[in-house]
Structure formats: structure tokens, C-alpha cells
Image (tube, rainbow, N blue to C red; front, side, top):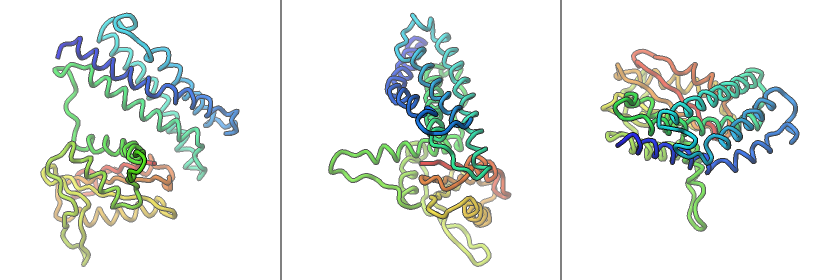
Amino acid sequence: MTSRKLTKRAADYFRTFVRENIAHWAELMRELSPKQGWGDGDDVSYAHDAAMFLYTATDEQFLDFEMPKDFASGADLLKGLRLFRAQVDFYLKGVEEHMTQASAASQTIPFPVSTIYREYEKCLAAVDEAIRLLVPPSSASPPASDMEILKRIARRFPDVVAQLAKRRSGKPALDMTDEYDVQYLFLALLRLEFDDIRPEDAVPSVAGGSGRVDCHLKDRKILIEFKMTRPGYKAANLRKELADDFVLYGQDHDGHRLFAFVYDPGRHIENPRGIERDLSCPRLPLVEVVTVIREG
């Protein structure tokens, strides 16, 4: 594909993304204002500032941009996207910091903070996709690793659930009521990326106990475990369950990796990013462990 076609494809994609979301961001900018009764804390004020930036920056730079009027070339567009990405990442890290502080203080994360966090994650994913479309294959980064693919699927899982809940009149929606529903949908998404998928694969007995791993990507040496929170389910429950998994799945799986996906639609897990970091480290003989928690 020529450089001009790559540029057009990336430009069309990101322009469409902004147009599909700009009205919602404008509404959020008004809805998340501290004047709407959310309080006058620094976290709420920061969330409102982030909402204002997201709307104004995309409205001014990317809503109706034209090539070459606004960006002289593909390289110029790439520069603009990367600069915008850095700004989005800056605000996202600030929002994450406020969420971590609230969780550490056992406080409920304010609605404006959690709401703008989701929008920034979505925007960051779209910017990354536009950059990927823009960079010629010869100079593109190496293909995403298996774990990166799994993390991408996990990151978008709540959006897929939300989409499946919006069925036409008379069509039953797919509701996530337990871990089996999570496993059912996640396995379907895995088939977009992997060929050899083995659900409910048996694992050897350990200390008199045995079980089945939720999913085994045998040719990739990856074990996948699914969790779904419920009322009363806290971080301590998750830690214990995963500790048991480390023992059970580590046997006879030397050199394997474990990916744990936790769907938390009710936001029962406090400080999810901190828990992810704590539970994402090698547990020999597992050479890699990645835990991803996604809120609904």
C-alpha cells in the first residue's frame, strides 16, 4: 500500500472515531463539572479538566481536519497523533493517580473520575490504532506478543459486553451473570487471534486436588483463567483464588505462562491497578503471570 493510501486510511479512521464520540464528550464536559454537585475535591476538578481537554483538543484538531490543509503529509499527521497521544497519556496517568489515592484511602472513586478514565482509555486505543494504520509495514513495530493480544482483548471486553446488550427489539441480549458467561464470550474473541484453543483442559492433581484450567493455548504455552466478581467479593478473595491457581497450574506446566482475566462489572475490587501489578509477576515454574482487571 502506498504512503498516500496509508495516510488516507489512518486519517479516515481517526476522523470517524472523533465524530462518533464528540457529542458524548461535549455532554461529559458539562455533566462532570463540579457545579453539577460532584463536590470540589481535586480529583473531581481534575476529571473535569481532563474532560474539557478531550473535547476541545479533538474538536479543534481532528473533528474536520483535511489533508493536506491541516496536516501537510503523512509524517505531519503522525507527528500530530503522537503529540496528542502524549497529552492523552499524561491526563490518563493523572486520573489513575487519583483513583489509586481514593482506593488507598478506602474511599469510593468519584463518578467523574471513573467515567473520564474509561473515555481516555478508549481514546488512547483509537490513537494507537490510527498510528498503526499510518506507519508503513516496513517500519512498523514487531507483531504484538501473545500476551499483548490477550491484554488487548481484555481491555475491550467491557465494550463488547455493552454492545451485545444493545440488541434490536425482541432479540435477547447476552448478559454476563457469572464466570461461565465471561468464559463463553472471551473464548469467542480468542478465536479471532488464535487457532488452537482448548477450553476446560485438565491439569494434574496436586496434594489430592485436581481441576481444569479454563482455557489452554497449548501451542503458545499459555494458561488462561477467568474470574467474575460479585457482591462481597474483595481483593482478598481474588488473591487467594489466584494463589491456588499458581500452585495447581504450575505443576507439570514448566515454562508456561498464566493469563488471569478478572471481570468486575460491579467495581467490587478496590485499587484494581495496584492489584494487577501485585499479581502480575513470575511464579515459578510459571515463567510469566499477567493479571488484568476490567470494570464494567
